[in-house]
Length: 335
Ligand code: EPU
Image (cartoon, rainbow, N blue to C red):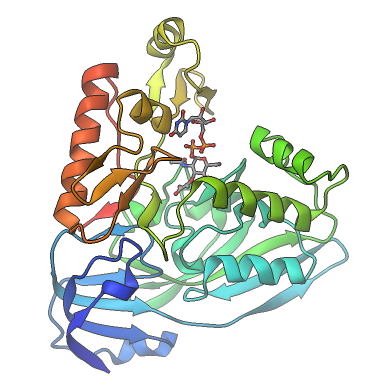
């Protein structure tokens, strides 16, 4: 059950050749109760490895959450509740929902990672976040040793964050997620890139399959495939800034993308644009670069190590701060 000095190279999408002092693959919820008592600490819970930058070998035990299974829990004439265990691949699960002709996940097509880690950072794309479709989840509570149930309102979802990234971090391990999906969905196609792509495909009355196809095409056109080029998607969050700062930036840079937020005093600004303006887009330093088609994506061009990637992220943060007085915050976890 326990493997020692285990390579994590194939288990992180940066493709970093780090090892864990110990490794256990959890493929059944019941295994949590049977873990040996003498495992090296701390624990690290790994899902699809698509949101983690390992800067060194991990001295504790990696518990790889690889619990599989999915299905329809219940249905009425309008909706179905569909579940997936945590170890299922996210995009495979989106495809399964589309095969069932259920709408809600199509805008979230092709996001790397697993179902169990998707709620942790409230994954989102093209106007939809997982919080919009989640009906509940189950998580193993390390403190009580029991499975706890969470409703959406218990998860404290916000832009790229949740309770599982804050006070629940290292306490709750998501094991199963339930989604409320629609039989007659209303599509979310207001995002400009989706409209442009549907136009290119000559689709006037799209359905969920068309929207998924459009999203896949957009993502493939600018986001690198982690199987080809090591990356973790957006490395930083889009920062929130005060209105006054947003207005003065807009006056100086008329093309800066600025978006409203739920908080009327704050605006969201595109981190990719800020990074590009600082000259980092496609600029190669050693084996590292911010991606040439999307400057928000930190890429491992081959043999970079985690520390080199982290140093590059720090360089980018420093120059964005110096030029714009904006502090970027990582979306990716750094260990
Ligand atoms: N932009 C640039 N230069 C760049 C990148 C972006 O100028 O190099 C500007 C463009 O004007 C573009 C705008 O920024 O129109 C927005 O870019 P994009 O549509 O690519 O979205 P994003 O804000 O950079 C966010 C998410 C992505 C998600 C897209 C689409 C975050 C941190 N990232 O990126 O999520 O796919 O929106 O909804 O919120 C991820 O989290 O890993 C991820 C890829």
